[in-house]
Length: 197
Image (cartoon, rainbow, N blue to C red; front, side, top):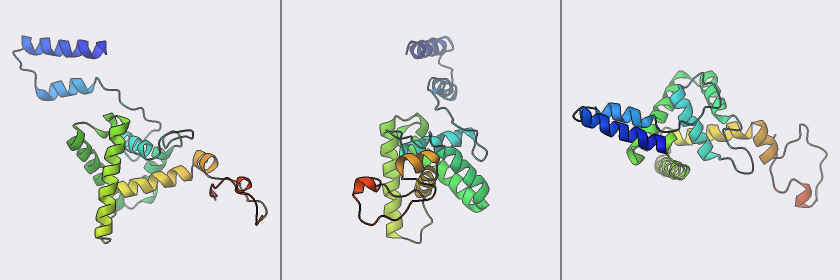
C-alpha cells in the first residue's frame, strides 16, 4: 500500500512541476501498473496473453476453487485455448474472440476496469448478469446466435468435467465400471455422484 501511495504522491508532484501537463493516458498507464495482474497457468497458443487472462478469470468465476480444484487448477483455460485453436472453424473462432472483446468492454463500461481486475464478488455478479441476459435473449428468440457467455460456460464445464480433477474428485470414476448392483444404499453407489464416463 505504501508503494501505491508513494507512486500517487510522485505523480501528483510531477503533475504540479509540469504544470499538470501529464496526459490522462500516461497517468492511466502508470496507475494500471499498480494492480496485480493474475498469473497465467499455461502458455496460450490461440489467445493473446490478455485474452488468456480474461478467459482464465472467467472460467475460474464459473468453477471456483472450493474443497475441489477450480477451473484454473483443472487446466480449463488451456483446454479452451486448445479446443478453439484445433477444433473450431475460423468463423466460430472469430465469433468467440468478438464475444470475448464485447464481454471485456461491457465489464469496463459497468465497472470502469478490466474484468481481470475486479474483485471476486464483482466478477461473479457481472457473469451472472451476462448469463441471465443471454438466457433471456435465447428464450425470447431461439434463432439468435449462441451468446458468448453461454459458449464460454459450455467450454468451461466440458473442460472441467473431462479433466482428471473434475472426473475423479467431483464425479465418480472407474476406468471400467464394476458389476451391476440393482438395489443398494446410496452411500454404496457413490453418494449421488454421477459417473464420469
